[in-house]
Each structure stands twice: as structure tokens, then as C-alpha cells.
Image (cartoon, rainbow, N blue to C red):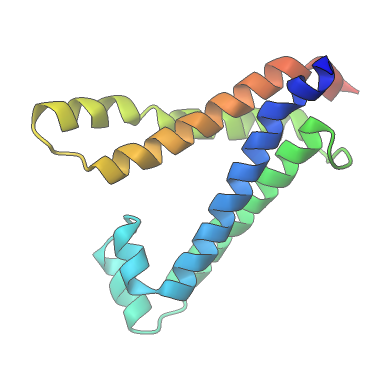
Length: 148
């Protein structure tokens, strides 16, 4: 039973990564308004509106990367077979999401002081922080098992 709970953080990280990958695919389908809403900027939205392949390709690449990271999280949890470079990729993913999540601190201060950051940006950082902490917790739980 204890082993099941040790796997849970990496399972959560995998589910969240796959959910974000699907969200990015939905952004491609929705087009310019979705690029604007999710913070890609006016230039990306304009390119999408003009039918450029660039926004879709970049967003698909992000979706693919998130899907791969999700697969590694599942491999780290033991749900799927072990993948090559498991520990370094899980550590890198953890660091990436924690770094993105750390933006939450200045965004929170900005929201409290002058309303500079949006609540949306803050919530995106919060999701990244939860992901980073899930990876960190999962790595701590399963580090020894990931050396085999």
C-alpha cells in the first residue's frame, strides 16, 4: 500500500502534463483567440489569424514535449516501462516546472501592490509550481528505484 502512495505524485505529474498537452492541441484548433487568452502574444495570434504554420508548429512542439514529459512521469511511477535517461529527464522536468512556478512570487507581489500581473498568469504559474512539486515529491519517493 505504501508503494502505491509513493507513486502517486509522479502519476499526478503525468496526468497534468498530458492534460496540458491536450490543452495546447486545443489552442491550435481554437486559433488566434486562444493564443491571446493563453498569453502567446499578439504576434502569434496575428500569425495564426493569417494562416501561418508557425504558431501551430510551435504549439504542437510544446504539446509533444509535454506528452513526452508525461510519459517519463508515468515511467518513473512504474506505470509504463522504464525509458532511457529517466532520472535526468525527470530532474530536468522538475527544475523546469519549479522555475516556471517560481514566477508566482513576483506575480503575487505585483497583484497585491499594483495589479500589474494578471490572475491568469498567476494561475498558470501555480499549475507549474504544483507540477514541479509533484515531480520533486515523486523523485524523492522513488529515487532509489529509478537507479536500476
